Image 1 (cartoon, rainbow, N blue to C red):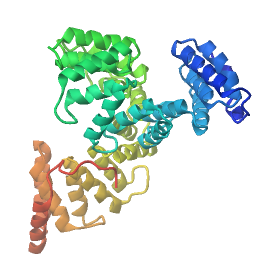
Image 2 (image 1 turned 90 degrees about the vertical axis):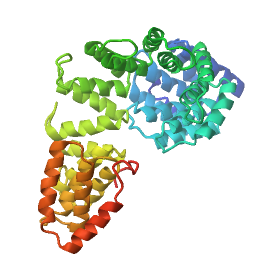
Image 3 (image 1 turned 60 degrees about the horizontal axis):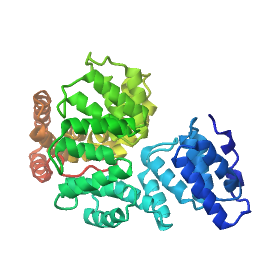
Image 4 (image 1 turned 90 degrees about the horizontal axis):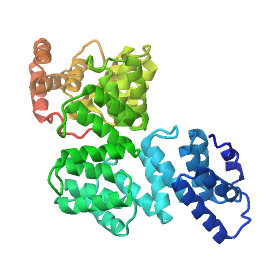
Length: 462
């Protein structure tokens, strides 16, 4: 059913409250309970007059109903939640933070904006927002986390049985990210979180069973747990099962068609990685799962919207080459810029090619060297070779023969593909013949100072 009674509520939020705060709070608690139990019509009936009277939390509940109801309306949900958050609703701030993390409700993935909303809600006393913020920081999206501090705070929150805290803490303890691993305690925390119904806990516990964390390996129990989590709506668990069937893990023989089915379920439930892996299967030439370039493009778009950089890079290549769509250099350039902004070495190199040659914009060879060098330093040898080729080309500015030849030597030293290496050798030998002795000496010194591939962590596009 489409909840048409949501429309117009945002405009009435500033209405004067006509009921006591205690009655309002009781009503909001009742609406929350009805929403949590799936009694959506009742939740809407209770929330509507409260929202019209100016209760931001009631408006947030209506936003959640528009998001998760029987006929989801993302645009209406976004409007209601944004209005409620601006009026101080903790519920709305947390929901919008999650949407910005996942690229939901038509929003682009924006971890920084999500963190600000979580901080806003945590400042108003929301422990759930604090757990979400910790998990976002732990993902590494802002750089290497302070694991000890995160663990210490999660210890407190888990002791208070804050939803999600035990699951997050169990993940840290299982992997030893904050020091020595504590598999037994991690297992106990995960089991307790599953018993409380924490989101993501069953998936985590299932992986512990698969890998023998805190107990003997239990492949069948782990697979069964992932299936239960997937059936309960955990999209990432469906993707996990796809990976097991694709690669033949946890006692399974590889079954590409079964893997594709699980990836499809994950993608349909909104998991970007499920969409990405299915897109790969639909474009790899393996007859077990026939290629479907147009569907693959659609799936890559979904994964791109969820902030998965490797999908964004592949989407850019699809538009560049016209795979599953018409050639669209503007769309290719925009997607490649997004991928390069995430620091992907291949995307940095490919954006350099676009900038140098004028794909999606006018050529700008002077801006390409920084992109090629960033790609090379992050581990992509071809980036170093492209930098050398550009700097040694007398017909294209900028020309820096010594620097170019240094990168030529660097590419030869680190290339593992024999065919590419042979091409580098031949080209570098031709360039070397035209270098003056002082240029060779300068290039040799510069080459010795260059770091190996991957020594510099990937950074966003310069």
